[in-house]
Image (cartoon, rainbow, N blue to C red; front, side):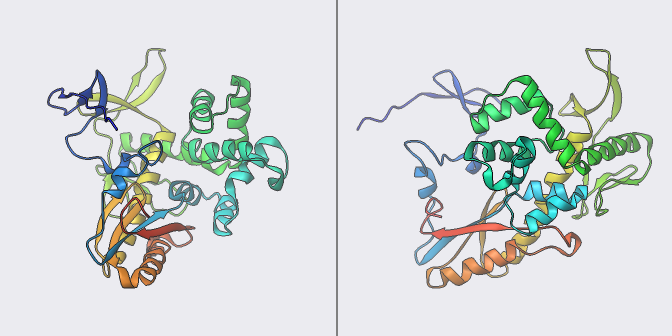
Amino acid sequence: MLVPVYDILNCGPRHRFVANGKLVHNSDQVNLQNLPSRGPYAKALKRAIKAPPGHVVIDCDSAQIEARCLAWLAGQHDLVQAFRDKQDVYKIMASHIYGIAPDQIDKTQRQVGKVVVLGAGYGVGHGKLKAFLKSMANVNVPESEAKRIINAYRNTYSCIPYLWDKANQAIQALHNGQSMVVDVPGLVRVEPGKGLTLPSGLHIQYPGLRREYNDDKKPEWRYTTKGLPTRVYGGLCVENFTQAIARCVVAEQLLRIRKRYPVVLTVHDSVICIAPKDEAETAMAYVVECMSWNPKWAVGLPLACEAGYGDSYGDC
C-alpha cells in the first residue's frame, strides 16, 4: 500500500506547520488532544502510546463536567438534580424544545438537545447555535427555529442567564475596584486588584479592562491579551470561570489518583494513568472512585465519569 508523503514546512516563529498549502499544526509539540479517533486511521496514533511491559493504560473521563459545573454554579437546582439522578439531560432539554415527553424523543431530537445543553450555556445567540446544530448534529434549522430553541433553553434554565448577568456585574465591579460574589455556591468572587478568585487560590484577570465602542457604536468591555484588544462579556466570563473550576476539580482528583498510580497524561477532562496489569480492575475502580469524589469546596456538585483500560491509550 502506498502512503502519501507531504513536504511539511515550518512557517516561522509561531511554529505553524503547513503541508500542501494547508495548516496542519500550530505547535512544535505533539498535541495529544487532537489525535484522531475516527476515519480510516482511527486510533492508530493512540494505539502507538503503549503501557510499559506488565502494565495497562487507564483512561478516565469526567462526564459532562462543564455542563454540571455550570448548572451548579448557577444554582439551577432542577438540572443539578437531573444530573445527580443520572437522568438523560439531553432528552429532557429536547422535550422542552419539542413539547413532547422525554421518552418520545428520537435520536435526532436528542442530538439537538445535546448540542443545546453543551453549546448554549455561555450566551451564544441563535446564529451560532444554528451553526453548532449543523456542524455537531448535522441538523439544518431556519433562523426562526434557532431563535425558538435558544429561547426554550433560556426559559427552561433561567438561572443560567441570570449568572451571565451577575458576570456582567462582576466585570463592572472589576473595573470599579469593587468586591462581589458572582456564583451561587460563593466560589467565584471579585477581588479588587486581583481578579476573579478560584478555589485553587489562583485568579482570572482581564488586564487593561476598559469600556470601548465597537464598529456599531455600541459600548463593550475589552481587555488586552498578547498585545491585542479582546472583547469580554457576561457569557464569556462565565465560560472562563466554569472551565477553570472544572479544571480545579479534575486537578484535585488527579492528585488523589497519583497517590497510588502514576498519572502520565491529561486530555481535556480525562486523566490517563498506568497500573500493573494484574490489578487492572482494582486500579480502574480506584480511579473511578477518585474521579467521582468531590473536593471539600465542591459539596453538591454532581459528578460522574467513564473509564476503560487496555494495553495502549487507543485500546482504552
